[in-house]
Length: 256
Image 1 (tube, rainbow, N blue to C red):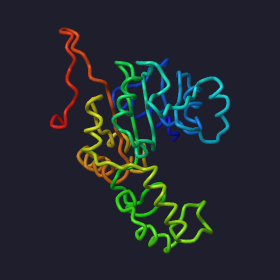
Image 2: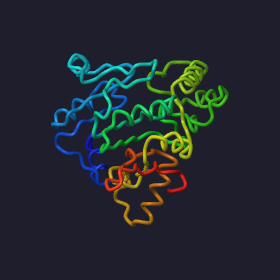
Image 3: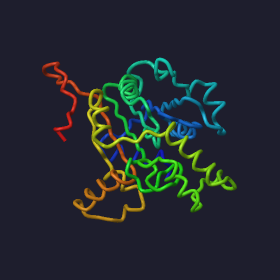
């Protein structure tokens, strides 16, 4: 199943299916492949990133302003306030170094009735998903990385490199480009801007574990997947009580 299909199905299962004319933002769009696919399905799709990866659709999407570059200083997503019905990312939030600014910007460009869904690697994932070294999201010492490099752990593009070169390259990448946080720390960054739900159980339906049944077991398994594999974070802006005009408070940690 395409990533786009998975995201749309998860949204539907949560109770927030996208309307046919929904505006969608791929946050951290890379080469824009998902943007192109979402456009093909009739949605009003855009993407943004600091730089774009090579791909067949990059030139067309950039020239039509469908994919745009994020400003560094001040950190700003290149879209007006309240633009999108749905903002999503996949394998992006583990690279974010400025969570407070990022969450503020994601909230700014989301419509008051819009939602966010972000899938990203867990801090406790046994095999770090970028350098393939066990627990490298937690242990980043040169000795640890060197040990696994000596054992032959390599990314495909690192084949032929010495163990020392691999360990040095991996350490630089991990320190500069990955920022893993605990579940509670992420919640603390998020709650000033959004109400949140962890929806790993809904995500499980679209993985190889989908054949497992039983609500209690799936709930337990969803928590395990969130802690040790992939997190699924569903976000909504604080809502307003129509009868009084008062804004409901942002969900606090003790409410969950």
